[in-house]
Length: 114
Figure 1 (tube, rainbow, N blue to C red):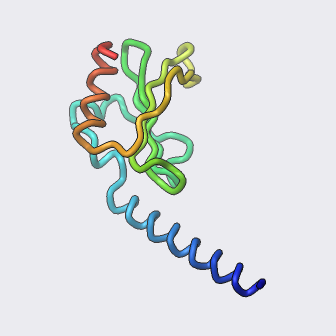
Figure 2: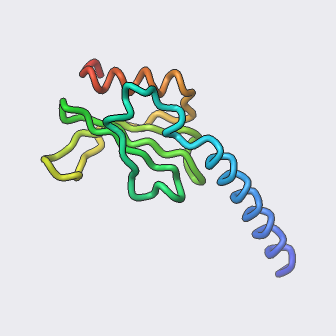
Figure 3: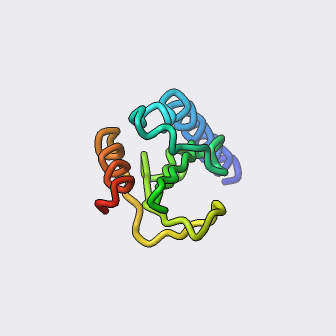
């Protein structure tokens, strides 16, 4: 029985490594429109989850994750509390985004449309 568990854990670890390799080949910042990149920076979990953040002049932004344990390319709209990097999430995240939809949502957040 123990050997079966070890085999399952080893298999899951290999799948996780393959997902990580795939995400490193296609990190989220490579999918972002050039016009949005000046507002982008790496989040705390950038190395493990491809975490990138956006902070727009209107006080809103977005947090994007793309790595193990996420719903594909996943994004949530955020509002910054003050001049620090503290923020609040006021909605459910969008998951399994395609590049075009992610950029469309980012532009809408930047322009105050959503």
